[in-house]
Length: 394
Image (cartoon, rainbow, N blue to C red; front, side, top):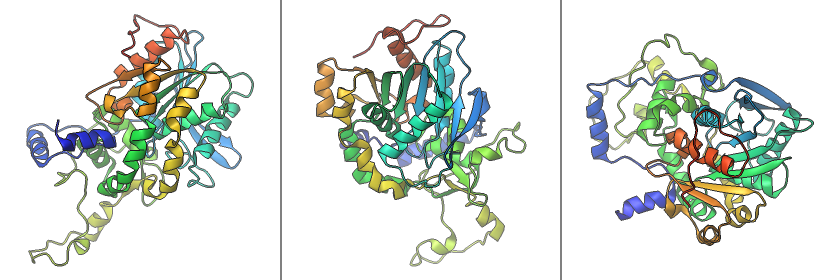
């Protein structure tokens, strides 16, 4: 493994495709047009609800209630994602065990609306989740399993640490470890700047997410990516525009990116000292349409909260008095504290290779199998259908 590959694995950021790989991707598309049409939430969840907490409204998605009594899996997404990141996973796990999934858009994300979208401290985010659950289940809530990805995993651990959730029986953290997360913060701003600022259309945003490696599962990207971008004119999440006109027709690749991590800037903003070449003016309307969608949240502005999400996370995770599962995309992700804790048997660990940071989107079926097996092993849930639990890898 080259030093560059090792650096990418340690940073836990999506890898940047090489020029040769981009060329191969472009060549393969000449004979085959992929469909990048977005999908809607109701293909994966049973209901969508806006939960009012004081002056704030939190968007919550729920799967159907289980055929027999089972736990509630509360799903917390990572920074910049939305509750729709759990769409495929929810469908998979509810087919394996008797349970119900609840995924919510955290403050500043998705369709959630708050009076202060920029208060993204760990305590505020954890308190939001606890208050939403208390409103949805004012008396006795079912047994709760917290599952969090990246930032959401840190918030889940914070929730348990503060004892904010009633009847909590388990915790699963996906691809977040204090040591590697803190190391990656130094390069996070550079990574965020490398992403396109605008997209011409929703299918183009989906195409970029797959080609850049942010999400390696096209079906998941189709439902997840619309929850991450908003219309620059209406300031509404792009999910509110679905289904798109003529949604029945395949949406081909919208553009061929010279670099899949960037979108061409307006002519007047490109290098002024470059050699003069013929300039072909585009209609003003077309240039405006090229900036129709942008990110729902500008993560670069949340930098002051990053350290607070992850500091002390490893020891906090080890000390939590519930059955714990750590799911990683690479064994290199473990820091010293968790390595010692894992050797002492303080938590279950599973590594899923051949996937990126969004493990649960890239391989939703395998992640569901691991978590379902963990829940059956700890007698939190019962299998449904022909599902046979897997033995833990670590």
